Structures are given as structure tokens and as C-alpha cells.
Length: 249
Ligand SMILES: [Zn+2]
Picture: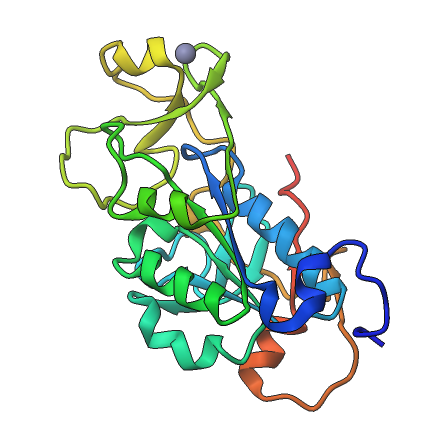
């Protein structure tokens, strides 16, 4: 059915090997990159493409099993510190999502390889560090990508658009994973201004207080993608894609 149906939403991947391409979602923290990645993945998944999401293994904010946005939407994923660990697994899928792409040292070569193999690769990544320098190797994806977008957040100091990530501590190492306790999205003016002592409190519960609920409970809506006999990993990825409701205030 898939091959005979004009693919309105995915013309590129109806042509098999010619389908490969790279989409990049840039932006500062709190700009909705992971949410946008999830939206795009879900769109393909609902159309019955085989989807896999790869997250960075050292990022355990909120959730051990899936990727998490700051507002607690989740999408089960496999974890790695280098993408080549998942090369063979990824080749079994048609759509590959990568969250926190800036943390993977081999993100550029992996994405290019997979796109050449005919895969759709969707990467969400910080474009810049907290010092507004290119994050790792990630900017080298731009000339290889078919589609690049930079999202903006709301400046958490003055409420205009925020395009940069500002670290609210004096730690100078590049890879410090954290949420609103450590980072703020800020505009150009607020990036320049001195760090205030008490950054805005996160509207969301702290990671320690969050426990992911079962998708079948509490009004969360699992998306079940048909009965197939698949292995556990594929099950966990393809059949538990769901969005949890935001925490009740
Ligand atoms: Zn500002």
C-alpha cells in the first residue's frame, strides 16, 4: 500500500534509495527542538515508516528510557555516546531521529552516511555553546543538510525572543547537562549583561521529582501502530511513541 500511494507528506521517501536527506533543527535551550523532532518523527511514524530515535547516553534528564523535553513530552529512544555504536541497528530503519546531536563526536559522518543510504535523518541540536561558539562539529552538518532551521526561545530575562543559551554558573566546561537551574535562553542584550544571582525558576518539577507514567494511564494517549511481531527494542520504540500531558499546575 505504501508504494502505490502517492506520498503527499513524504514524497522524498517514496522513491527508495533516492530518499535520503538530512533535516537539522537548531536553536538554544528551551526553544522546542526536541518537541519539533518528536513532531516530525510522529508524522513519519503515523505513516508507518520505521522510526528510531537516538539520544545521548549521558543525558538522563527526567527519563531513563526515552528522550524528554523540558515540558515532559517523551519519546522512547535508544541511547549511545557515539552514533557508530548504533550504525547496524539504524540501518534497519527508514527514519532516524537524533536528539542532542551536538554531543555526538561522529554526528556529521553518521548523518551523511545514513542519508547516502537512503535514510531520512532528523537532527535536533544546539548550534552554539553557552559562549556562542559552534558546538563541537555540529555546524559542519549545515553544508550537508537539505533543510536547516533555527528555532528561538523566549528570553527568560526580558521576554523578547531568545536566540542564545546562557549558563548561569561559572563552570567553563562545554558539556554540562542541565535545565533551567543552570541555563537560560536569552536575547542578545541579556546574553551580554552580568549573571544575576537567582535565575528564573523552572516552571517544571525538578528531575528528581519526575517519574514517567505508563502511557496507558492518566489520560496519556499512546499511539499504537498496528500489530506486528517485532523484537523488544522495536516494540519499545515504535509502539510506545506517546505524548504525556503537561503536569497539572
Ligand atoms: Zn532579554
